[in-house]
Length: 78
Image (cartoon, rainbow, N blue to C red; front, side, top):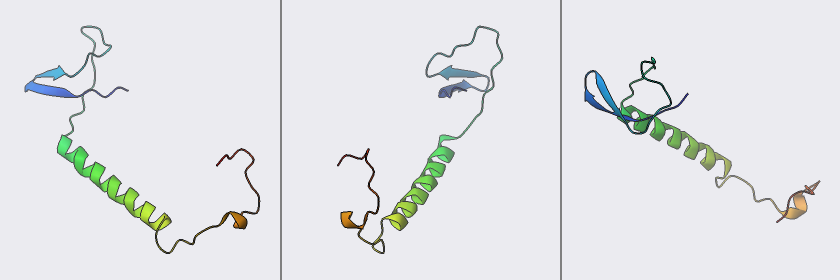
């Protein structure tokens, strides 16, 4: 599946932002999504990600010292 932005010219014509690989006469599916809806959903994902990071790296997270490591990873290079 390929996602391409398009400008609405009128109720039956679109202007694609880039060419698509489809021969003339071929039927393609078009999904209409209001970009405002995408922005709102993106903001919700950002808020959720931020909250998860805040939880993982918040003030209640203890400081770990290198001496606390029981088994070192030989592939890790500092």
